[in-house]
Amino acid sequence: MKAVILVIAAILLSSCSTLFTGNSMQQDVDQATAIIERFEAIPEKGIPASVMKAARGVAILNVTKAGFIGSARGGSGVVVARTEKGWSAPSAIGTGGLGVGFQAGVEITEFVIVLNTPAAVDAFAKQGNVTLGGNLSVAAGPIGRSAEGSVGLQAAMYTYSISQGLFAGVSLEGTGLATRDDTNAAYYGRSVTAGEILSGKVAPPAGARNLLKVLSKY
Image 1 (cartoon, rainbow, N blue to C red):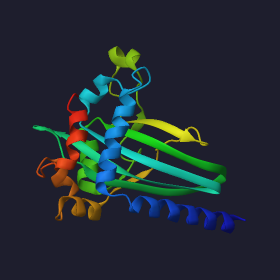
Image 2 (image 1 turned 135 degrees about the vertical axis):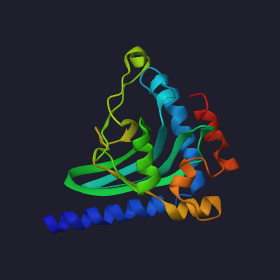
Image 3 (image 1 turned 90 degrees about the vertical axis):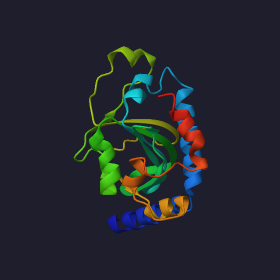
Image 4 (image 1 turned 120 degrees about the vertical axis):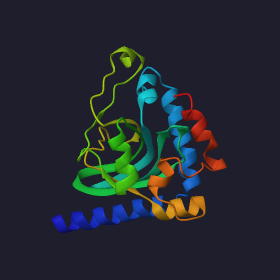
């Protein structure tokens, strides 16, 4: 039975990975813009402006989780960092994983991960692979306008999500996020590192203009 569960989970993981490998960087950038706008549309339950204004960086991604007996998760998105000249160009990131358990259905979750410290940004810029809740603490972020006056730094990263579908209570604790180097190379037309992008050494392309405009208010 365990072997069957693992096989099913592997198939689901492969399906999710295939789905998100096909995402172009521009799709992820446009999707990130829409996700931030959707969070802004629910100020009573969204990210406090003070949290965004204090952020050293932001990772934005869309994750699909599907399962029947086993479960698989795959997603893609971008991360940007605050520099001396404003927000950096976006760097491509992705995630994938599998689990076992009696679960059924499909869930699409949009995540915003607020990077509160320089170390959190460095993890994306230098390591290539980041495990949330590993060396850097991660916590559900304060929510809504009512939290504005009482927001204090509680973790290196805050997570926020908007979910649809049959699953509930999805957490990114222990999730691995990886830099998509090939996607970055295709988007920028040359080989670039996440560190070069997030430090501001790579000029943002025209396709990132809307995302940076949305973030520029913070």
